[in-house]
Length: 228
Image (cartoon, rainbow, N blue to C red; front, side, top):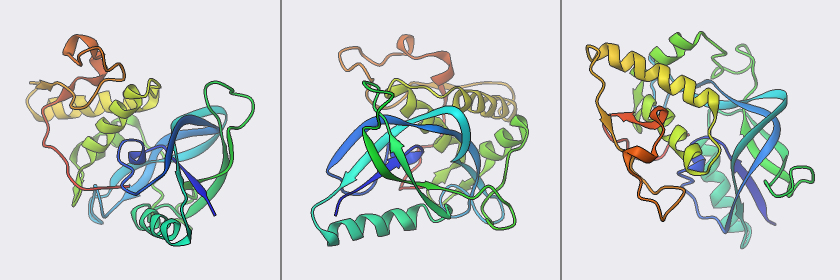
């Protein structure tokens, strides 16, 4: 048995499990939204974080990474148990087609697992639903949990999508709104820092001049550990 799982949130930059192959690509008719509560990684039950899930949207595409796990039933079981613990707020596993940039018509893989959530507040206690951009930004700017603060999750996702060459406009817009909230909280003084990590172009030094303004982050505490 071999399984593939698609990562579109923190799995893009921090898979956290042993895998045999990693492929960059996208899925169709889904888009990222920050409509899911996280109460055990980047937030608490009293002040939940907002993390991304997928919303079915005809014609949309969502870029991310697909990971392959093979090598026997025990290895696959351990990887899936880890993923189920980590993605515990997601109440569904959906099977999707996965495409590569080289051939956007024919699926590169079929039957790829992706963790999704039921968009219903009654049947899914973790589903927060949409909210005004300013309200989401305020929540993300202030939520924190055992794995770090919510804003770092958002900023790291923004950077991860930049690194793979497929920025997400929605993520950038939300991240910039969070920066506005943090700027107000710090009396309007925005402190920038260079992003940590390798550039998508390793021969080019990752200096401030090579990073779009949208990706120049505030001076924030570093987060640790894994999260959903």
